[in-house]
Image (cartoon, rainbow, N blue to C red):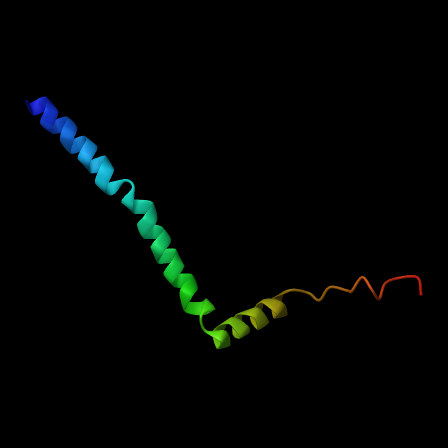
Length: 66
């Protein structure tokens, strides 16, 4: 009888705690993205900062035969 209780506890532990962990971490990541990407002002600021760090690429249209 003790054997069945131990097996039941182990199975219960895996059913409750193991599948819940990825969903909790995913929900946390979603809320972090949601903060910046719902504010147009913050999103514009972030894209400007990214544009400053990257070098400007030359357009393929200006480098031609003409």
